[in-house]
Picture 1 (cartoon, rainbow, N blue to C red):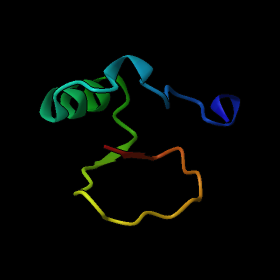
Picture 2: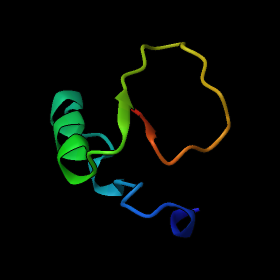
Picture 3: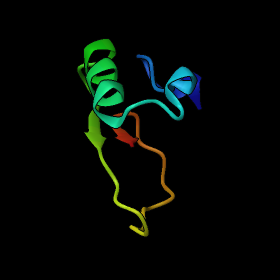
Picture 4: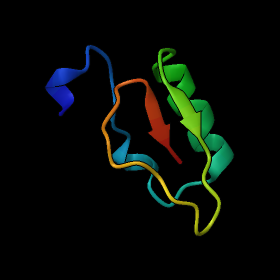
Length: 55
C-alpha cells in the first residue's frame, strides 16, 4: 500500500513508543495525515486511507 500514497504512511520504529511522541513525530513527518488516538477496546474500520493513522 505504500506506493499508493504520495507521502510517508508507515512508522514501524514508533511501535511501543510513547503515544504523544509518536503523534508528534507522525504529524511532523507527514502534515497530510490525521492521527487518531485509540482507547483500549475501540473498534476501527479496516479500510486503508492515506490521510489517517491509528495510534
